[in-house]
Length: 226
Length: 414
Image 1 (cartoon, chains in turn orange, red):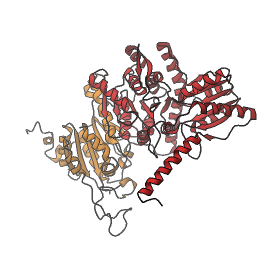
Image 2 (image 1 turned 45 degrees about the horizontal axis):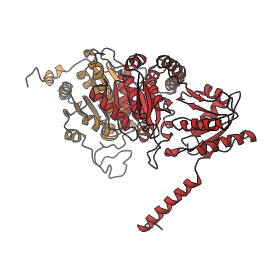
Image 3 (image 1 turned 30 degrees about the vertical axis):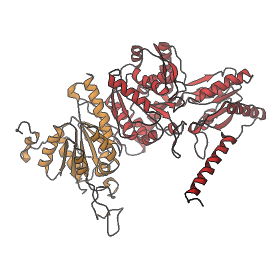
Image 4 (image 1 turned 90 degrees about the horizontal axis):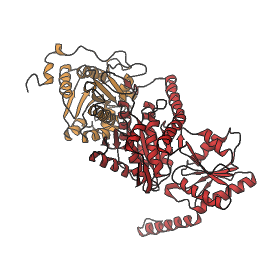
């Protein structure tokens, strides 16, 4: 792949990283929030022509009336159906574009934003459906390995043996962390990747690569709570 | 204008086609399936310029419906019973988003026990969702109502989802002659979808469906929804008047049949109201001055129209095809509340019948009319009644006996 065709090649060095800071400050997230760091870095690569479709979680409080930190667009859905919300938005944008009711430059990149709780649990059926339908969307899962918004209770992404407010006995969580990456990969989506905001170059390259693709794309960011 | 023999389901599909719905998120459920199969056939054949997406659940289906409407297209969808309940979280949510779309609910009794035939506990579970509700009793009404419902949902003073209810089997699978509005005239009536400020465009970024903290903004937005739903009353009447002028069929928020000089009235919604209408004609031939009050609009609730119609009668029977466990018929409670501060009130009798498609035969309508006569003579309303015959009880006892024998055969019975 040549330099021009490879969108990830735009990020060779740390100084190539965008300094746009598209995501506004002053949100309700905790200081040092790992998920927020991932969203912030990803947003600068994705750009403002993005509509985030959010599932219930910490990030739901990013847009709290009358404020929003987004230069682009946002739709909060519910815990179980953010990918279905992405489907409705994508289908409607396609209809509007194809019938000439919307200028092509008004089109948006549709991005599901959810935590591990929704991504591995309640939202998995809607995710599976979206992959089946080859929906053109990007899924950003910030994984803090528990139901962080409610106090880090055990989710399907909590590792084996972890002590959580709902697993307080000595042996901790009996199950193991669900392999969401493998579940996606087994269904042959356009792209699956893992990132960490502590590796911003790698994160930027992967989002740039995913942005240039069509179809279902998953990026999981390990995003520990402070 | 064409005439066709259509099932209630086909009539619902025609309503969406004539309204030029852009988008149909779908999920099959008996007895709704024929609606989405019909639409799919038209879309695939190029007869209907729309897109259908098969979702993996009704929860996702309603999410996609609201999200697409929030992006700026005209949306039609349909479900029934368990599907409506599975998607109910999103019906409340999409109403809160103030997204206009039309959802046809093909009524079917709720589990448990799981069953297939109609009653209204499914659609009444959506009563407080913020979605408006229109209830149909004939196939003609289904086509016309679905077409009008798109305009009602999209009305600038309303901007809420609208549920059009049709009874499973009795209406969904019954063929009736239907006059189909001319396609161009219907499109002209429906007009283009006007998203207003509610749309996603790169050049007009917007955050929709954002959180609020605290009761003050929450109350404000919930009150706004309530006021929008109430505005649906005037909007409905204006849209129905325009429809009547263009197509010659007039629909009121409350359909009144032979009520002008009535002493008594049946109050019913849905397809079984045609049975009440038949009973009215039969009893009128015998000299009983009875009429039928059939609310088509259930949300917003047309209190004033109901109170005005029933204020003239001596006694009325509210026949509920639903049951709120521990309270009784839901429509009865609503009608009673509408009458409480009316200057003239009839004696009000509550009857629950037709659950899970159970028939309400002519003899029962006669018995209910007789009960109204007795109530008027005694000056006291009778206690609520659950319609069930001795013959039916005998049938259930037989089933229980069979079940007991079968369990005994398996060695599990005591």
